[in-house]
Structures are given as C-alpha cells and as structure tokens.
Image 1 (cartoon, rainbow, N blue to C red):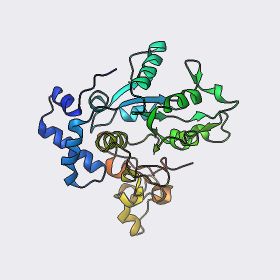
Image 2: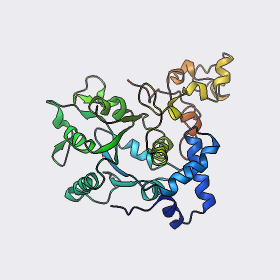
Image 3: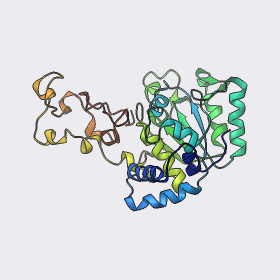
Image 4: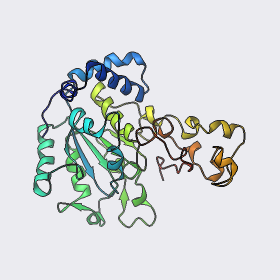
Length: 302
C-alpha cells in the first residue's frame, strides 16, 4: 500500500516546482472544459487532497486500455499511480501475484471502505451458466466485481468492453458478456468508452474526482460530458471540406492526399462522441483521422 501524502507533497518530492504544479492544475482545468479561473480552486483542493485508493479489475479484455493509460502524458502514468492516486491492485502494473495480489485487493477494500474507486476494463460473463468462462484466482468475474464494488464510492468502466459490452458481446456472444452497468445498480457508474479510450480522459476523470470529491456531469450513456459532449465530426479539422462537399473517394486519390473529408470512406465521426480530435494520441501527436483512416465509432454502443 502506498503512503498517503498529498499530491503537492509528492510532486515536490519529484522535483516539480510550484509553477509546474500550477501548470498541471491549469491543464486539468482545460481538460475538463473548466474556465481558467478554476485553476486556483483546483490547486487549493489538490494541496489538501489525499490520494484515493483505486482498485483496477481486468476481465474480458485485451489490455489495450492499460496500454493506453501507460501513454498518458498529463499526468504521465508514473505521476498518476505514484503521486495522484494510490493504485492498490492492477493485474498488469502490480508487482505482487497470486495470494499476495488478492490480499492487496482485500486490504485496500478494508482500509478504504466507502471511499475507494473501482476501475473496470473488459466485459464479463453475466450470472448464470457462462460465469466460468472467465475467472481469476478460482473466482468468477461476476463474484469478484460484486465483492469489490460493495464498499466502493463509485465505479469507472474504462473501455468500450466494460462500458457497453464491446467485442466480447458481439454475436454469437458465447460467454454471455455484459457491461459493468448491466450488473452494478447501487453505485454510481461512469463510462469511459473507446477501443482503447483516450488516456487523458482516464486521468482527467480521476483528477476531477480528486479535486471536487465527486463525479463530473454525465451524458445519457453515463459518459463525462466534458469529453463526450461533442461529436468527432464537430471537432474534426477536416470538417470544412465536408461543408464544401469535398470528399476522398479512395484512400490514395488526390482528395485523400489533400486531406479531404473521409465520410464517404465510412467515417463514423458525425455519430461518434469523443475527444480524440482535440486530445489525440501519443502525447498529442496524432489521431486516426489525421493519419488518414476514418473514425470507426469505437466509443459508441454496439
């Protein structure tokens, strides 16, 4: 279990100046679509905030959501798990294994009862005959989820598999895969879909919880409005070409080379809500449409 220093104390230990700390707070405000005036409020909250315990459960998934998280750059995954949160259980990132790993999960649940966050990636077989398709330490995904969320403050479903069922739920769905929100009804559930989700959205949501002690405003699919409030189409830099009726017809024609709209190549941007166009990937380097591929709509149900 990590020691419980405040975020500002941990940042100072890592050589981050007061100016750097305020820059981090300003970036957090920007990510959450808050006015610049909120920077001081965020700083004041983080000065006193104790890092919340986070238990990360991985079920029917491909580890892509964790891979995405490790590429977060504001904060980095190192800052996130060492300074911002206390990541007490995570199959991929934890050093412990076997009985020691499960003991760490139980300890985090007992010591932080009512205050810890549960992050889930991957769908899971629903209760019934299919529960044995996916087990951990001899226990079904369903039993582990129900046991862990009992004392949680909230649940964050990371990735489209956890949020909406994703690929495991596709026909013929032999495991009977369901989403987290199909099973958890007595705790707040926030969905952060995407295949994988934008890493900054994951860290931004956790920063919001730290700052305000609660969850942000959500849309009809329980997604944070700050990140999923606008469509890919509305934020896309190719939108002017759409408005002018200029579309690429193939992936290598003159229109494609000039950066014209990819709608006729199957782009789902008009019906997909996410922050890819503004936050992008790999430290803000690029995103699928910028690299010439239409949006697949991975953050939408089905």
